[in-house]
Structures are given as C-alpha cells and as structure tokens.
Image 1 (cartoon, rainbow, N blue to C red):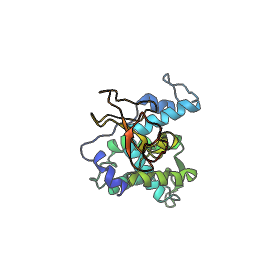
Image 2: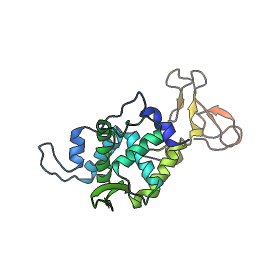
Image 3: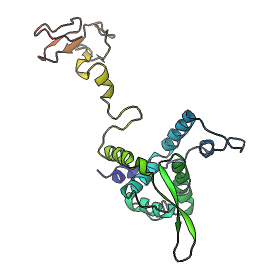
Image 4: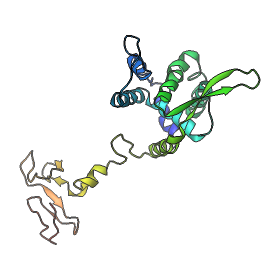
Length: 229
C-alpha cells in the first residue's frame, strides 16, 4: 500500500496535526526559555527529536518520503507543500495556503534540518539571481529512511526499540512456550508460573517437538521427553 494513501486520513479532512510546543522548538533550535542560547547534551537532544516527530508524525514522514524518492533533488518548502497536496490527494491550499503552510511545513523543515534528517542547501534562480533555501534528504540517512518508510507502508512493525515484535521473544522465551489456562483463558509467559493466577488450575503448555499439551508443572514432555521449561 502507498504510504500516502494509508496516512491520508490523518491529514484530511477531520484530523488536525499539532506542532510541537514552542519550548521544544526553541530548545531544539538552541534557545532556552529566557531567549538566550543553550547547548543541548546528546540525551536531551534525542528526547526533543522524538517529541518533535511525535507531535507531527504524518507530515514528518511524508516529507521524508518525498525527499527520499529523489535523494539528489533539493526542493523548496512550497514545492514540498504542493507535492504533499498531490500525494495525499487533498484540496489545493491544504498545505500551501500561508497559514497552513507555516504550521504544517514551514516550521517543520528547520526542525528536520536541525535533527540532520534533511539538509538545507542554497539554490540560485538563474533568471533573477536570487537565492533561496531548498531541502534534500541527508545522504548518509537516505537508505535507512527509505527502508523504514517501505517497511511502514507494508504494515511492518517499526519501533524505536526493535524492528520486529518478535525480537524480544527470540532472546527470551519463545511465544510457543506461553502457558495457557484452559479453564479461564489466561495466558502468561512467566518462566516460573505453574498455576493460573485467577483460578489456580494448572497451566498448559504445548510441546514444540510433538505438539502434545501438558501441564506446565512438568519440565519435560511426557510423550517425547523434550525439555519444555
């Protein structure tokens, strides 16, 4: 599924993304609450970056998707806004009208630049000689960002902590060894639980080797002898 088609309900027509609080933007851009300059330590910076993406995730992901499609092309903010309207199939002005552009695109671009996800470059108009800012994907992050966006559009699990919901299970107890109470339906993955915490009936496990169901009080399968706990 196209990522813009799947995310379209979040930008049109009912949902309204909010921008990050002003203090988050100020700190990320190097200003403290009093208007002075401040230097962010790495951990604070990371938290602020997550807060920024979290407040405007759809617009952030959409801009990254557009720029990652043409990694060598730098686009003006208004070009990006028009492309957002085209990709999301929303009415003209939804991203380009001044009051919408400022909140939905204009304020976001310098923050994404500050987070080093995109780069700001200077473009010169050959006819007028005027210069203006344009943006392109950070070359060093182009492939990782593209891979994550492709995974997201396919419905795959994308997380800060893991790429797959089974990653933790692979390191610990396999999901196949979850213990289930056949009396009340409670399921637990506790390594030490032997009885249901609700009804006190013995929990059941399924042997990976032969498929037999047996009470979790046993450490070895009664049918084939495979260790199950």
